[in-house]
Amino acid sequence: SFVPVKDLLQKAQQGKYAVGAFNCNNMEIVQAIVTAAEAEKSPVIIQASQGAIKYAGIHYIAGLTKIAAKSVSVPVALHLDHGTSFDQCMLCIRHGFSSVMIDGSKHPLAENIALVKKVLEVARPLGVSVEGELGKIGGTEDDISVSEKDAFFTDPVEAKTFCDETGVDALAVAIGTAHGQYKGIPKLDFDRLREIVKLVSTPIVLHGSSGVPDDAVRQAISLGVCKVNIDTNIREAFVYAAGKAIQDNPKEIDPRKILTPAREAAIETIREKIRVFGSSGKA
Ligand code: G3H
Ligand code: 13P
Ligand code: ZN
Ligand code: NA
Image 1 (cartoon, rainbow, N blue to C red):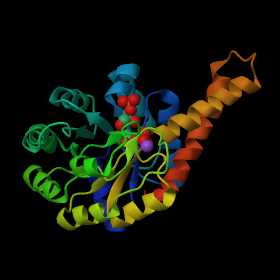
Image 2: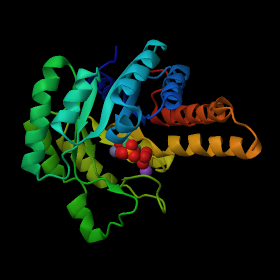
Image 3: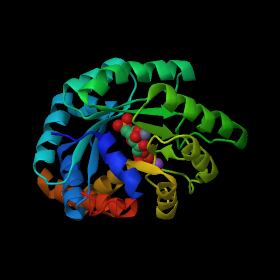
Image 4: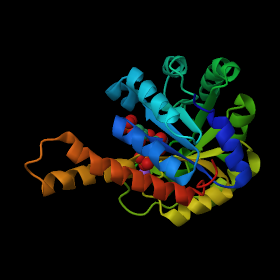
């Protein structure tokens, strides 16, 4: 069965590396994630967003990932990405997820804390890990001005309050990354990350990590990031390879001929990420 994310992140924190959390939404991507992790002898987190669960169906996500985890020797966790309600978290726990994110970042601090506590009350006794989020991790379409930075980025003192009061297992922070493709090169607020890590011992999660230069990711990990979320770079690798296969063989009607190179491209992208995160050989 799936290992708790908490255990993976505790080891990562001690070993100064990060565990990759890769988004899936179909069979080929699930296979790519565990194949890459096995090849790198790395622990891995498979994660599914609410949108992915809606697309594939919770039974397929739970079923495909369970078989994937059984097919490899490395530790595999299954995590709900950006859960927005208590009920969504409960549904995933019932289906065997070993970790859930309750993203209360749109709520005021007190409500965010209350929501995380409510999920933890059920999750903790079951050994299911819980990730919270503080600060607003934007989409790349949001242009954040300097004055907005303080309003959107994670406040280190609030982060301490949030972690002390909830006892959450992982904390997602807003330090300049965004979901989706970046227009330019993202600039991370490392000083803010340093401040957060000084005040908080909870493992830190970096969202929106696709498109962040490898050196910046490595620096964030050296400062205390233990979980790195990747979705967009997998989508790009998968879809570009599928597109190329169609272009090269316009008469091809066998989906397997299109999706085999797509899956191979996803495996290569995930392996490269795992190497950057420093988790190769840590299984
Ligand atoms: O955090 C967002 C993930 O990339 C999932 O995106 O809601 O389109 O599945 P999605
Ligand atoms: P990217 O799609 O930018 O890699 O973000 C992934 C993410 O943060 C999932 O929670
Ligand atoms: Zn995210
Ligand atoms: Na991104």
